[in-house]
Length: 183
Image (cartoon, rainbow, N blue to C red):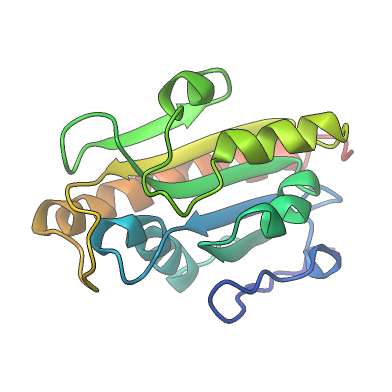
């Protein structure tokens, strides 16, 4: 039986991992990263909100905000992990989907200085022997990371494409999950 429940806590307060739902014993976590008051740094959270508006059964939606190592349990518990975030590479408004080995070479730097990098989280999960089997990032290249509560125009315009690409990846994963052996 599959139970779907959106997970969302107050900003910067991660939801404990025991509350995560599974799809046939497989955990699919989507973590939105960013800072709501730093302009385009909030793009991962904007993508997360759009995905949550029409949830996919068996997928956990987690507000990562500006959390660092606090979200490590959600990374460790995932069989499939999708991170939504702003990127530095490319032109502002470019949508990128990074999968597996593509992630380290394109995420060497954090978008903003407050972030613990995704690579740090994945390395910590690997050191504990609890890294996800499948990892992807869907992101949009940011224009401005400054004190402002709105996204740049080209970033806002790119959100539907990012949502569509994330949704496609999640549909592939949920299909695989029904045939996958959980950790």
